[in-house]
Image 1 (cartoon, helix red, strand yellow):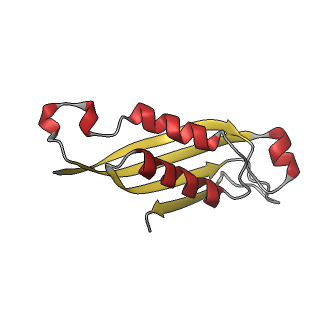
Image 2: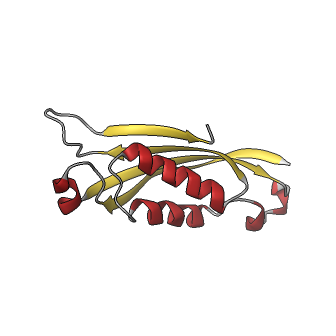
Length: 121
C-alpha cells in the first residue's frame, strides 16, 4: 500500500454560482484547487494508471460539478466537488477543495473570495 498526494491547481471554469440574480445571469470564472490524498493498493513501480487516480478524469468530475447546477454558496460547491471525487475514486481517502471567486459582489476591492473544505471531515 502506498500513500501520496495528487494536486490539481487553479482549474478554471465559467459558471453561474452565487446568491444574487445578476451572478446567475452574467456568470463568471471560478477557480478550483483539489488536493487529493491517495491510498493505492498497487505498487507505484508497476507504473499502471489503474492503481491511481487519473487526474484527467478527476478534472472532468470537477468540471461537471462546477459547470452544472447553480449553487448559492461556494462552500456548497466545494463540498459537492469533494464528495463527487471521493465517490468516483475509492483511492481518495481525503479531498481538500478550494474554490475561488474572483468577482465576489462586495462593496470594495478584493482579489477574490475563497473557501477551503476538507472531506471527509
